[in-house]
Length: 130
Image (tube, rainbow, N blue to C red; front, side, top):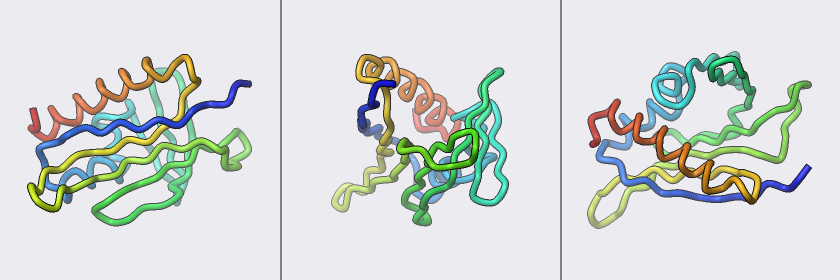
């Protein structure tokens, strides 16, 4: 299996960091824009899209700032891959943006980035940041 590469994308979002955090850190918030359904049991989250299901562990979170989910294998063991959603606030302008850190196969980074763009577009519509 090929090594995946890490990539980052930053999306400006017209929202308060507190509101945005609710949508990136709770199962109900995530299921409104990120996946068809999201369930959590303790630190483990199940992300459901159509007929596929992926499990991740909430690896870290900093209230109001960021969440990091580490993908787990079929045995519930951490893999080396994760995705992180980090809320950035410009000190001068107070502009808010969402930094996405994720991994994809080298030849699929563009496709994965487009997928994030679509999902973040859904998030922006949800919170009225269009």
